[in-house]
Image (cartoon, rainbow, N blue to C red; front, side, top):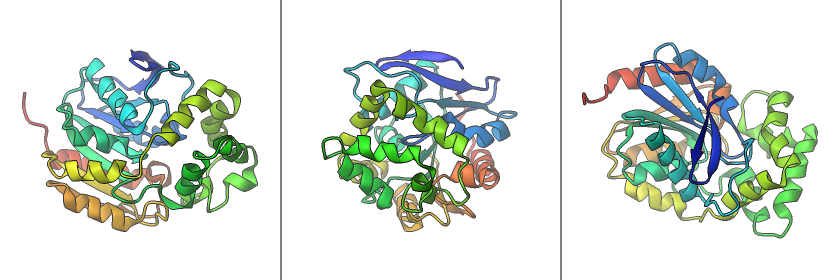
Length: 281
């Protein structure tokens, strides 16, 4: 994988290359580029697909000790990624953690289109039992470390009130080991993960949503139809406040939409991009 040095440290990223329009796929907390593997493969023939491995727990390169890895800090790193690679008119696609909303809310001009799939938004933070467990554990000394130990035991992470409830279909154990292995092995990765968990305010996404009312570019809100952690009602409200927002539901999917039903999501992405051509430079 290529690497890129940003202000917080060096990150890995996927880049399929080519002359197609850039589509940037953004993973959530405790995940990496593998969440988007099927979508990346389906889009690479016609688009330049990029997937940055953000420092949200499953990254392989710990960041600098003084790096700002709050929600706003991650959003700034994402903006830095777009700038460093000179990605203009990019279609930014977010799943799970809502950090792309924060970048879009600031009016980053490199974003040509915004796609939000089942992510924290509005007042749905912390989301579901899973989000609330992390939120309150991050407020107790040693709490997050204890929560992370549950990922050593398949019977625990498969529970519907844990990671297993974020997907409609059973998650392969090898993927879970890939995602949580860095957190269980490396204290520096845990430090980065803790920074994010402890520095997201309950008003973060409410305030971002207010600023999104002035986002003047095409936006698609593609929500998992069976999502329990991020209720579809949240997605509908989010689409309504975006001036050019459109709401669709992805069937047979919960929070991890790109894993549960990549075929339906890719079809919606292609239609959205084709119906909203990028302005000519």
